[in-house]
Image: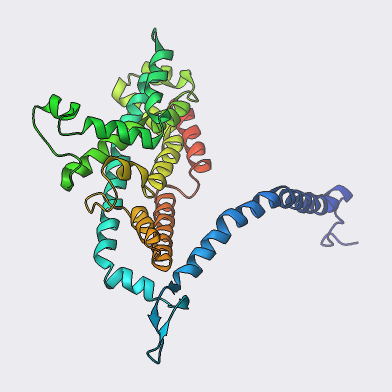
Length: 328
């Protein structure tokens, strides 16, 4: 036998890949079996309504004219007419106004809520007497139902309400225009900032105390510790909170409807516009608005996750662990 002849693999080495492959396949089958009920429920409660809504957006109900000019009643196939009417037809003005309001509310409220929520989390994380009472009081606005919150702020923003009494001016907050937008933003930020604060607080409590101690020993000041230690370590929780709030505000309906009213151009959102079309029995148009809103929300969520990290939880957690080891 020459030295160039390959040696036979050991039995353990030859069997290891085969056994590993069987284990992986068995794990995948078990995971598929365990996830199948959840996927079935999601397909029923999410997939079917989405497909049914898209199908409804391709039809029109009521009276219309066919290709020969005869009056046709009931449901008829309209193709993309509902979508063309939204983007460039007789309903385009209302659509672009609602899209502008929805985007403005989303950007403004999320930015304000993020800043205020992080401040709330830092306060609730401190050790002081009465901390439990402070935490409970901060979370009260988030626990109030949105409709009740809208009625409360509607009383505050009345012409003879508390807001005008404090400012010493008479502002028609709920009459329309920019004051109505400001009223919705104030009420929304007041109600939902504690949600971001709560999630960020959970992230703060996961940071080891030794990390801050090491940074303090190295001479880092409070702002430096916050920027280089605290903020990177709470980034996963903060990104999840911001993503949830963005998806929630994009579907805003009840707060502006209760606070200002429906069919108000200054605060009308895409959800309110779809509801208004459905109330007028224009279900095809309403489904088209809902489909466009669904695609808009999906696009925003995709860009958010794509730009800030494909794996918000996993990759950010690994990066935070590396930073913590480097600081320590």
